[in-house]
Structures are given as C-alpha cells and as structure tokens.
Amino acid sequence: MNPKLAELIAETLDIPVASVTPELTRDEHPAWDSLNHLRLVTALEEEFGVQLSMDEIENTTTAAQLDALVGAAQTSG
Image 1 (cartoon, one colour):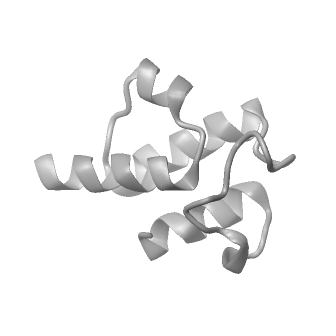
Image 2 (cartoon, helix red, strand yellow):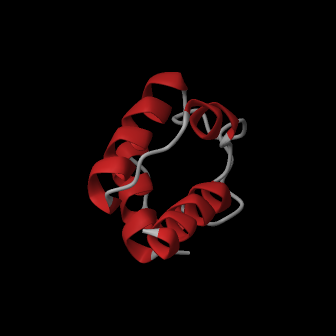
Image 3 (cartoon, helix red, strand yellow):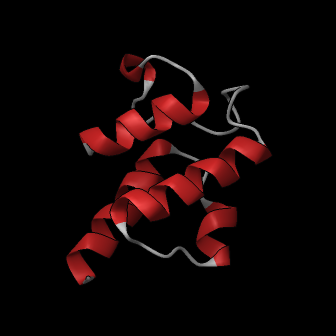
C-alpha cells in the first residue's frame, strides 16, 4: 500500500497509521462514515492529483480499492 495514502487515511479517520491495512473497510470501521469518506476522497484527489468519478467514489469501500485507484491514476497520468 502506498505509504502516503496510508498516512492520509489514518489522518482523515483519526486512527494510527499501523491500523491502515488493505483490508480496512468502510463498513467495518465506525470512523469511516459518509462525511469522512468525502473528506478522504477530497484529500486523496488533492494529494495525488487524481480525479475520481462518482461511481468510483460511491463504490470504493476498502483501503485496497483506494490504493488501486491511486496507482491506476498515477500510471495513466
């Protein structure tokens, strides 16, 4: 997992960076609510210079998916 992404997730969700694993899911973590999801997407777009589609924003539910989106955007950009 991208270390910068892990730090961004940890900061947004106010959790230790060690808790951020690819298996971290939106459904299983109480801090990853709808507001923090939008904050996370906004921070991710700013930090990595990517633009996520509405489908990507709505359907992303794990840290691994965020990592894949960032990796794909950086590869194609």
